[in-house]
Image (tube, rainbow, N blue to C red; front, side, top):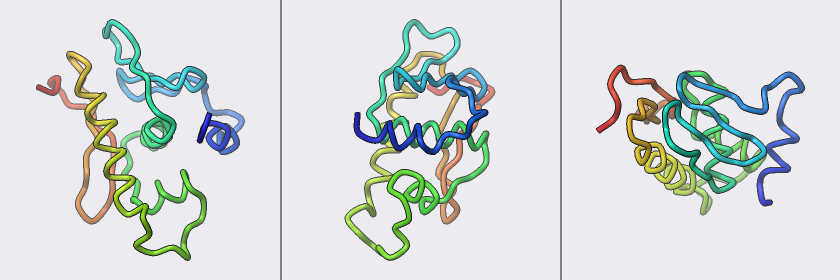
Length: 127
């Protein structure tokens, strides 16, 4: 599976196989997420899973797009404005759509303009 071995290599020894952020739970082996109270887990593609896993691990802290690219693709500091320029925002949009597809979900990916992305738990479910 593309991307997953790379993710396994980057896991710290003490990191849970099912990291959580509020009502959101990830399953590393099945590459899916679930929201507490939802009927079934939602499958993620490899890059979608890596981004969501990284945001969950950040526990609400903001990650820059460069940090996300570096985590997924490795050090690409020598590549500027590469074809990857839309990859992260497009993948985040796909993850957002999957999060929004879960009835009662309160987890959102926020884009903090000029800063990066973070997960937030809203007091009310997204509509």
